[in-house]
Amino acid sequence: MNDAPGQSDSPTRRKVIQTGAIGTGLVALGGGAIYLTRQLAAGGPSDDSAIPSKWEYDLSELQKVDPVLIRYQSIPAPTRSPSFDLASIKVTGLDDRAAQRLFITGSARQGDWLFLADSGNRCIWRCEGDGKMVDRIGAEKHFIVPSPYFDVAADPDGQTIWVTNPGKHRVEHYTLKGERIDWFGKPGSAIEKFCGCCNPCGIAVLSDGRIVTAEKGLPRVKVYHRDGRLESVVAGPEAFREQAETCAMGDCTQGGMDVQTDPQDRIWVRDRVTKRIHCFQRKDSPGRTAENHG
Image (cartoon, rainbow, N blue to C red; front, side):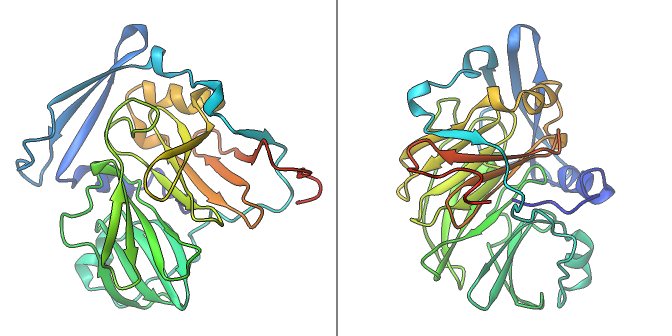
């Protein structure tokens, strides 16, 4: 996921939250516990009776991750890092309504196509390389995006893309024409699930096709096999304490993390709270150091 500079406090960003079909409030309580309660926004009542009206998570129990699962280590960030900047992307060919709601929070290039995750319109735009819109992926109301965290990543197969569906706590796999291939993900506090109102907030893909996800609220970065089985944890809440504290205050719209990978399969994470960029490398990477891959 990426976020253009200056967007985090913009009226458009706030509008993304206000116009959601379903919003979820995060209310902090004493003792490290939080309640997440469903709220019906201006879009009208929800027809999804399966969504419970209240979730309770005890964050004090979830802050720790089994060390056996953590197979990555933080390394000094090399000089050259992936760009998280979306400010230069311009989209053309939208109608007035879509253009007014446009809020790009992720991008991916696959072949000749540019795919843009639009939190405002809750869809993926398939564009020509110069940003001219061709069509959209995702029927209206398919992607549930209660807050402005929505991402897309290119698969190394050159033929498909991966998209987050945060309100459904899913990662979805699509052809370049927008046909859904499969998906994985379930809501919950367990390490293999996605916690909170709307996660994952960021996605990237490693060179062998494994999927990297980032979560806000309870900040966690994880790696999954393509069939949805958890492979490992990159870093847990202890690595992003300021991020966890910000969301515990009751407003995760000011948190969030962006994630990318590089050709050496290092995992880069931008913490939106601290503005710091973290770099993680697999512990069993033989002979790999920040110096010889910088």
